[in-house]
Length: 237
Image (cartoon, rainbow, N blue to C red; front, side, top):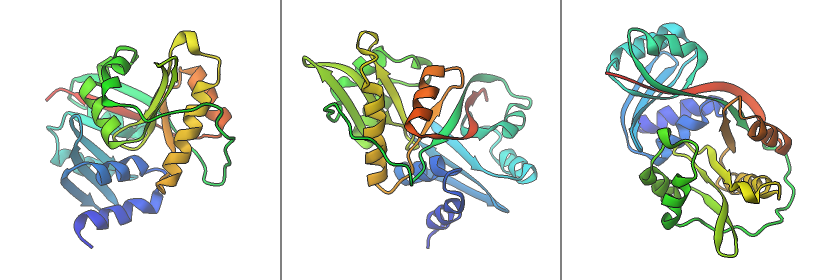
């Protein structure tokens, strides 16, 4: 096994906790890997140079962080990690979500609607309707359509609902145009994505802001289970 394979082997010992990090390592170039004790830090490039850290030890986490003190972008940080990352630093932005996963024993209902793969030509349209413009870009959306899984629902040749996977494999970008809601498009899109992610041998998971009550209730209704609160942060150098 090479170093990357050894790290993936270690991370898979807690596959639900580390699913984001595992998927990111598989899908993007990694330029730094560091391990102290049982804690692992990696840095890789998608839209930005993202740092992921898997740790259950405050001592090991602090040692890793000191080695990479000038990093700006941090992904999937847990609550207890935030004070260490924010210490003596200016935080430009922070996005906080609940991570939920779909258990392997859970069955799904059949989809009612026809869905097709999105095209990179849809990227600008999707960005225009995004509520997360501060955290994404047209180029990122294009990359995710090319590299990940994406599905859309059309009515009269108009894209009215869509969903994709993020750079860490999370199911996201779910959006239904307001005038086309309450038809079950969101429910079916999530169900179809779960099937596709499962078909690749991966664990389906989502990130939802806790004040997004509609999306949280939908995810729980479908069968997702809450795992932990996680955070993405950008800090100034």
